[in-house]
Length: 185
Image 1: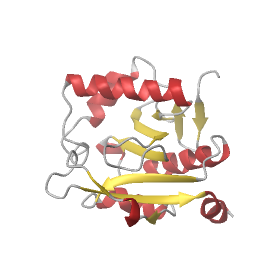
Image 2: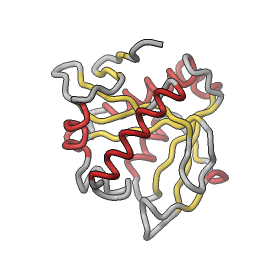
Image 3: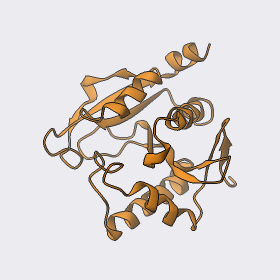
Image 4: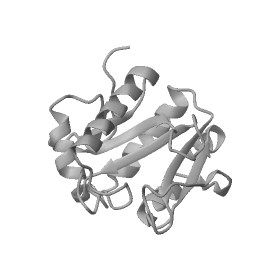
């Protein structure tokens, strides 16, 4: 299959390299970034996440890829595709997800990377529909889902207290191939 690399105007989505992980965790394993993602991860959780991301690539041909800024080679976080596997949630659907370090927020990087990931989902990986998950109080995340053209799918919401114990409902947005193609015009 070869190494994965996909370029946008300002970003590169690519396979992970061993040297990416320390930079990724330094930038993203913070209280603000991890607020709605289960909190700052200890070493065991970090290793588990790395192992899962690498296994998705091996088993599925896609993952939440490393996001690198072209301008300076900085690792900004991850974005990409996997099969939904959250406890209690809809299993096996194509899922888009992202996590960027805080100094990359508000610059359009997440939308750029997520749009590229949706292109890949429909064009390369032949998805019929793509979902995205977040907690209700993570308004920036579901706001981006709406800006991507995704629609709320309350019928797919599920309970999982791992991310927001005060409000344990995971909300789901989705976009289908037809809607994505129409938006791209």
